[in-house]
Image (cartoon, rainbow, N blue to C red; front, side, top):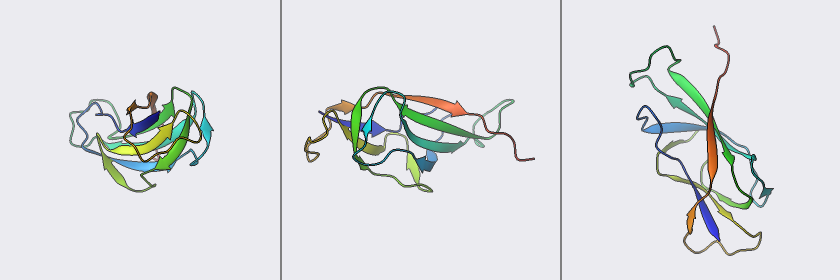
Length: 116
């Protein structure tokens, strides 16, 4: 079965995110907890209180799958709803069809020390 990795809508209404890293290699077998992508959101326009205006997030896989295609690269901007990658539930499945569903993932904010 083909699965797609989609950037979900984020709290605060951020329209764009910047991809920082792609942590998995195409063809790699991945298991729950495998790092996929880290991205940064600028929340300057949102009504944020007592939070830094920039937040970094890490997306990890919550199921077993094989990464078959990556559609983003570091330093690119993507929008909510964009397909970031394709996975399959078997290592040799053809990827020319439509994905049956979104891959199950977890997203966590990464608190980095302030640089001042």
